Length: 135
Image (cartoon, rainbow, N blue to C red; front, side, top):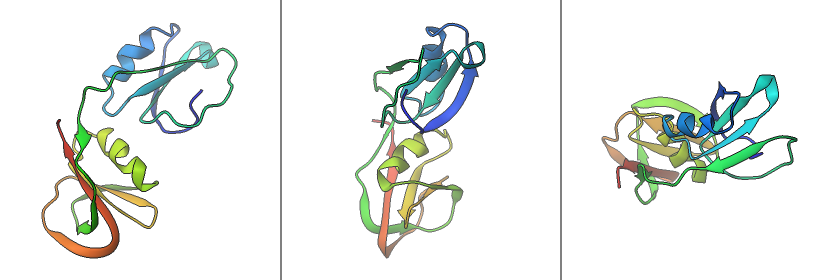
């Protein structure tokens, strides 16, 4: 099992059905199937720390979707917040990619602010921002 980083879960009796669910879920890059409740797919935005879980099966999708541009240090895009989520700066892009409407993010002090648009950039010490790109 890959611990944490869940986007959502789906009920599937068959492990092979999880791949399609993950492929159709924005930002999903890895899935874990467990026998919990007669079969559950946990769709995740990041494959990180692993742990043993009896009966679990996991797989990663090949990456061919959008990414984020290079990070801008000490740059803030004020306003247009979709949601603020706790997270490390290295998780903000993956969190943004879980939402079709996210166009980028600004991170500060352990919080990823996902943005509907990136308009006016301003200098703000400690803020890290990046735009979503489509490759």
